Length: 129
Image 1 (cartoon, rainbow, N blue to C red):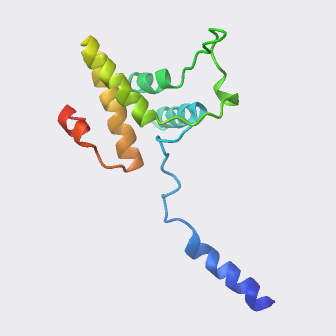
Image 2: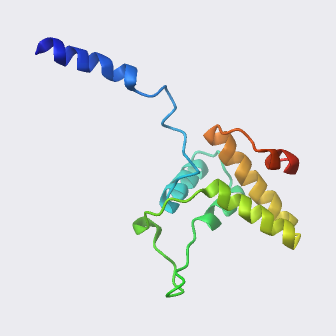
Image 3: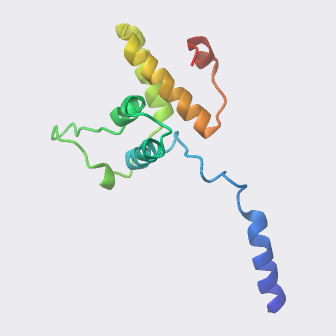
């Protein structure tokens, strides 16, 4: 019995993720509350300015189609691909020629990609993000 317990204990650290691996957020599958909490942590730590946070804040908003009221993010467990959401916003900004929004969303995608450690797509490379 002691050997089994020792083996289980010894195996646990080997199965644990590498240092920092769990610290990286997965922006492709996150709740709005998780994105909001990450954004606030970035602001509090001085890694993000309030101006830089605006595209992230916008992505945390959700309005109910049925009621027209905001949906509480704390009780909404829907997982969202925020990288795809921001890329969709980039497409819309390009169509509207809203270059200020385009720049903010490109910066948001770049921050998410760099933070998450995901390779850039060909489209992102063409856009210069």
